Image (cartoon, rainbow, N blue to C red):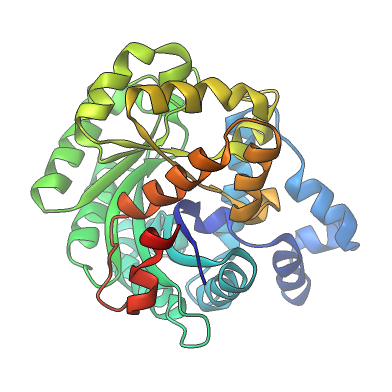
Length: 337
């Protein structure tokens, strides 16, 4: 039986390296010529980066490949792998729709085309052979215009069959100059009935307490228990959940080893703040969700009781769960964990 809910996974980082490499070869992409042997490409694609900024450059690479025509190919294979190898019952897939539109179009034309992107991903996610319940989180972006970001919020609100919430991505160091704008967009999203999450307190550049009251969940948020544990009672009172993605912090150089997450879990459990364990970029990391749990367990970051609590938190804080299309046996997962 599927046991896991995945709340934080980026479409750009979800492509398994071999699938991406084969696609690049078939398309005669310059990167395939640079890495004609798969082993070398995998080493390039999955190696740790020196910073979050360098790490995000890989997302840009994949975004250019994930065109409207190519999206069904990548999404269908993502769903297949998640079902077969990860035992996922539920998946929230996040991405910036504007960055999957045709770059030769005008800004207004690209805004209009975003609805086609959402539909293409939504339809490709629905598989009778691999029946994972899926929903989309549309990401605003710190480097996109206010007009585009507002259009993304409107699109999310107008796509209830496919979309369950919004996020903001693009590197948390870039929020500062536009923080008031993002707060207004989050207020607007909440007024439209959307669920909200945001990349916050992931790195030492991402401290924005002003935005915290407007998010249902916190993307990463590990610096709160590590540096600002006095904020944890506020998170507990608002019933906010941290989306903790262990491998990411090693790949971006934010942490040196996974053991540094131990106080994150200890302080959150003590304060009554829920944690959902996530992959963030399972393909980019070549680490699937069950192994995120296993790595935390074998490194004595969590115990089995805490593992179960995190599994339950993931379902409890899922934006589109329970889902009307979920079989009854799937809806009873929480009671058997």
